[in-house]
Image (cartoon, rainbow, N blue to C red; front, side, top):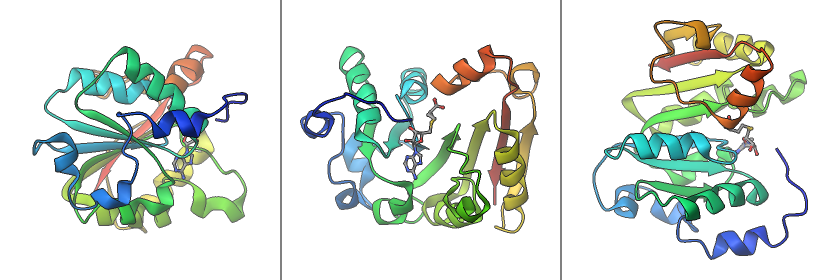
Length: 212
Ligand code: SAH
């Protein structure tokens, strides 16, 4: 997702108190950012941040970190936070490739991946966020009993993601190919911006939860 004509987004982000500006300096001490010892959940590729904000508002006993690679996109989340301040949500502009430099072993209790970029070319498979290369990074930062929750409307990406689980040493806890009509997995579902858009076009939403 790239937004054009957002001038000075880096500067506006640099001035925001909702953004953690030197995330690598927090490695191993993310609890200090929030001033409590609540579990920390992250979304990688947060986009404009609605999912993180809704979750943070609904779960004051959990701390959230929303990660997004583009400052133009992150700025949208920053602007929303200015309208609705949430003590248990912080935002970070970084690339998922750097996760292990930013979070310590087992520091994270849950990882959300929502509508990740599909990278359809075979030679780009390792850039897909549910790839075995990324699962190896998540293994480092996720607590032993931690979970990854992944949603997408992209059937090819979902099939790929399912195939990566076993070889990467993870296990499937739950799966659906039509989340919005799944009586078991739908309750409590919080929609993302992309989920709203693609489900309104009639696309089924796929979801898995994995652990190891
Ligand atoms: N999760 C949101 C946005 C989905 S679009 C939603 O469901 O509505 C995917 C987002 O992930 C884009 O904003 C893109 O910039 C971001 N992204 C893609 N690759 C990334 C990476 N390697 N690290 C961090 N963010 C990434």
